[in-house]
Amino acid sequence: MWLLAAGSTSTELVEKRTNPENDVVVTSSSSTSSTASSSGNTINDQPTVCLICGRATNTGNHYGVIACLGCKTFFRRVVLKSTTPRCKHDGKCVLRKGPKIRRICRSCRYEKCKEIGMKAEALHPSRDLIGRRNVVHDDVDWEDSREPSTSSRSSGGPPSFEQKKIQRKLSESSENAMAFLIQLREIDCSLRREVAEQLHISPDSPDDFYSIRSSSILLNDDLVVTLKMDLKRLRRWCDRVPSFPTLTPSTKRYLVHRFCLMHSIIEHSLYTLRSPCEFQNVFLLLDGSCLVASLDDIPDFLKCGLTRKHLTDHKILIPFTSLLMEEVVCPLRLLSPSPEEIAALKTLMFLKPTILHESDSEPISTAEDRELQWETRNRVLYGLHAFYLSKGIIDLEQRMNSLFMISGGIQMCAKEGMENMHLYRTFNISTFDEDSSNLIFGNLS
Image (cartoon, rainbow, N blue to C red; front, side, top):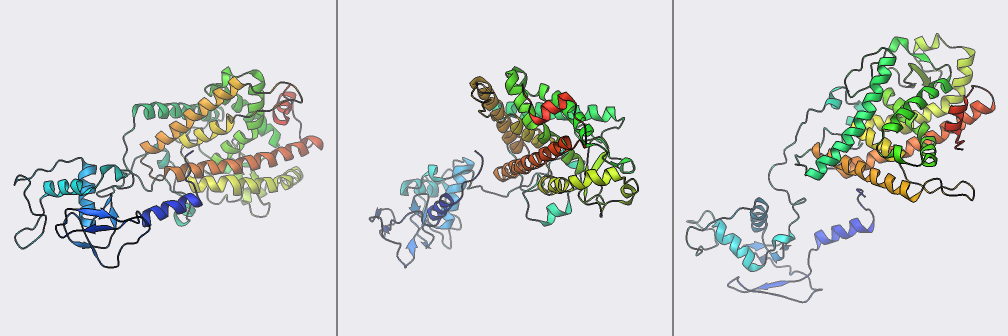
């Protein structure tokens, strides 16, 4: 709903700007009357005259009449600033510049603009900004805890919060919407603090992940064990998401099954973003272990601990790990999302409404469930939009689009991860307990 349309729509917009009208206005010597010819004609090659000040101009129509750029700018400023200029000579000023008249009377000039036919409703306040565009440098906590990546500076990626800011005042409804988003962010942050306490590690900041101890990172011995821990965190997160506890049991089971691997991918990918620069091919996991995208280009201390089981397991997972790095970690590194954006993305993906049937039986989700999911998702979208406004982001549609594009990579990796889990189960590479198996493989009964 926030994306800009492409194709014919953008072409039409360009045509409207470059050819605002095809009518020709014929002026008299007194420059006070004008008549419009029939449409289809073009403006004469000879310079026309500004109907307000009488100066020659070839710039065409502005706000409904032929006017020079000076009178166009003047009218725009008066309207947008909502000022009411007053005449010192009872409205009898001559609208001409000369040796003794350096400045045209603002009041008479404005009245002449309205008399000739300039229309205030023709202005677009969001487009016709006036004055200097001040850049607002907000001190945002989540920005201070990470260094901007070199790739995001040099590449033509999506704009970060450091770019193109403008102050905006939020309405009461927008404030309420953003408060809902902050509530979702706090759910994420509280769970991450719980993980830090379990591992006896202090978080770097209240809104951030806990610190990485490079020397303690080991190659993952059993991905299923890590996934079991993820599923416990996922259940705690789901129970705190607004509207989820009120859904029917069948809808709950399906949503958790569909989102379980996506949730793990998001959380581990965010943690991987904090990895030292020398860990380019390493995908960090929240339990302190890691996956590698290549067994040839990894840190030496990881090579020292290689076992035959490591080689077998990680050779199977190398394509999956490479996909994670390319489709999720790299886009996240370019975007550098805030905790609020991540909370919004997770909730939107989790509560995506669907109509699914089990064979010929009743739908898994009821109409009431889907309506509740839509309402919650709309609140998230409104909250995200309000958050962008509060941070002064001008290109918020592009920012939002870039955030949502990451969901495609997450879903792709989740499908690939599911194939690996089937492989693990089929060849007994790892053992799944009944609860984890039902949740991962979709035994929803």
